[in-house]
Image (cartoon, rainbow, N blue to C red; front, side):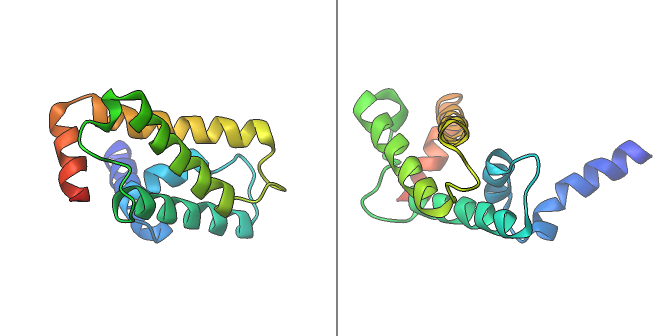
Length: 128
């Protein structure tokens, strides 16, 4: 019974955090072990802005089959770095932690897109 409750609680955590499910997944990567309330807000905003940049803004970075081409992968990686550099305080994220978080976000986006052609099509369709 407790296991089912914990699953339900985790499934509804995005609502409590004020994020979409996709934003929560990004936030979980961006958060650190100990964060101030201000740092939590910055990490949540970074997750929101990053998702918006990847999916909605121009120029498009998540083009069809972007994960298959090194130049397209580099554009996605750069877009992630640019948003996180703007949104996350370097007082809170030293260079090594920033690099690690950036790489983890890129790997999550890459894996999501490349693990199944359906996922890739969903990402492409949500962009266009």
